[in-house]
Length: 299
Image 1 (tube, rainbow, N blue to C red):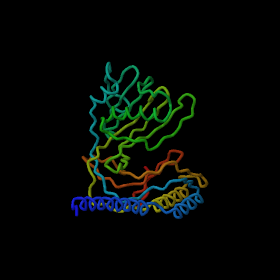
Image 2 (image 1 turned 90 degrees about the vertical axis):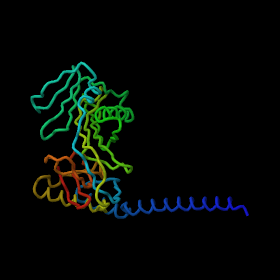
Image 3 (image 1 turned 180 degrees about the vertical axis):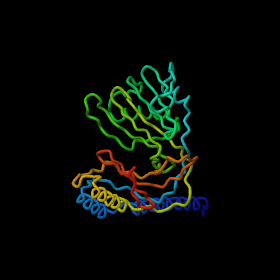
Image 4 (image 1 turned 45 degrees about the horizontal axis):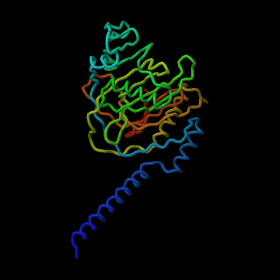
């Protein structure tokens, strides 16, 4: 008997069995942490009856760690050299008391005080101009802009996009967030909000809190439907207190699961973030639901 061949066959069988077990485990976890079709249908019906319109959203609710973030640390010199390139001037911005660095066509403001770490970009003649307004070319330009702000190793993705049909400013308002780790979890605290047209990026507001690592024990998060029911009750309370009109219809445009911190006003060296559901409505209103506690937050 050729024992080498026998051993090779057993090794092959072992590999195949492990691959099948791995695939089964992934499939099992995906089903376990995704809302069943009947519960998803019930959720849509219940919300729609309450004037909250939700379409085909079904966020997965895998267990998640907390995430540690450090405060922003901008390399001003590198950012200025990347974006304004040369022939720039520096002054104190009278409105924000931040440092304004500008050319004839573009400007950057580096905020201080409570908004320290934020950067505002403004331009009447931007050099971040897409070849055309197709999504691929728009995303190519804003990705270049993100890397010029925060470095080549940053991984920012578009999490929300709204079309602007006004003839003078036709284009998109786009929100980008950083993703972290091998599972690409969204970090809502690190954000670029920008307005881009065929003439280029007109303005942008950006901040990056630096991800350090996951911390603590991995924990289950509330299922997708329970988070949305909590939001439904929260909105009902808003209507009762006249924060919202009684019959005002609300249409959900986007739902993401990521990391968020409620109060960044206090000066700290680092923050521990819980996972949150972020729900953005058509009118731009944004709500967060803490995925550990199911508590709704409206910034």
